[in-house]
Length: 294
Image (cartoon, rainbow, N blue to C red; front, side):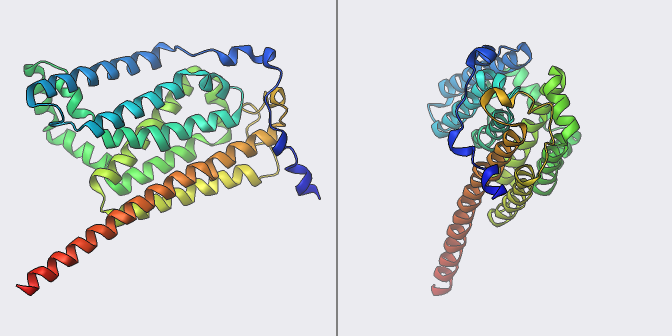
């Protein structure tokens, strides 16, 4: 009976008292967020145009990769600048949606796009050559290899998620702008390293395993937020009553977002990698049988 009463609010989840939080409909133009977004958009656009003028449309950067970058960039921009960001400062479920959009949607699209080449082509030839030489520096290659190796990337990404969901740190990030920026930056870069490692460096079967591990530990964290009987984030959930939610209900909804939709993304990606793995294995054995038949 108590459990039924606890969840009886779900069908009536409708925002209210809009005048109390009218500022939540305002777009956020934080220069520390907008400037990098505009710079990366400009560099990518100019670089793609310069490369395609030189090599031909679709050469070097395929149209689908450009589409992935545009989609990932737009999702990232909307997540960090739209009213969702301001709402996330007051409502835990909105904040969780924001985080999952960054890590589970925008990051894999950007990793699929492989934008580094386009960024390089945005610079003059002399600068490109210097940057290319810098990329070949042993120390930089070692750091890059270490950061984007599948096991370290998966471990780092998971550690970042659990670290920032420590109640004290999470509430402090909501209250302090600089800490909030750092939180989102670490989510984005750890997610980029994670997806880059799976897409570019991991074997397809190993990628399935890494996604399964990530899905399991994020599901555990989401389930904890849903099932724990007390409020863990009093600062983040303090404004929940403005939306006819108790702080505990706001926390539970946020946990559900991490548990179900985000888990579905990881599961879908794992199935895609598994399909590629099976397909490649089938091609390998078909080729081997053809060689034997000769």
